[in-house]
Image 1: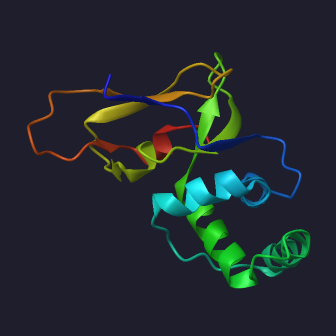
Image 2: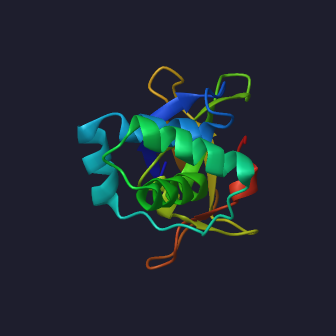
Length: 149
């Protein structure tokens, strides 16, 4: 096993805000300590094009969190949408999504040296397990589509 990690924040796979990414954003913004821990991570993201539904949810969430600018909320959404990882039950069904700060930094490869595995659904732990020998200095990689979405 390379890593076993519990999420910074997680939500069940039954979204309140149309999708789990917005649920994660709302949860991060609703707790000052969690928001500070999230900001300290400095996670990278892909720029997401927001459709009219996303813009509506952004406005709705910004009304609940008046201390956050819409630009900040949009940046949190982009990071969360880029870095969230699903966790599975014992049947391999995705039951939720979380932000796993260490695991989200591992690179993708179509020929990975590690595989994703769910751990305990109570703790929402996920794992990366080496699938072959990994040389010193070699990046840890996994196949992102290889996990439940």
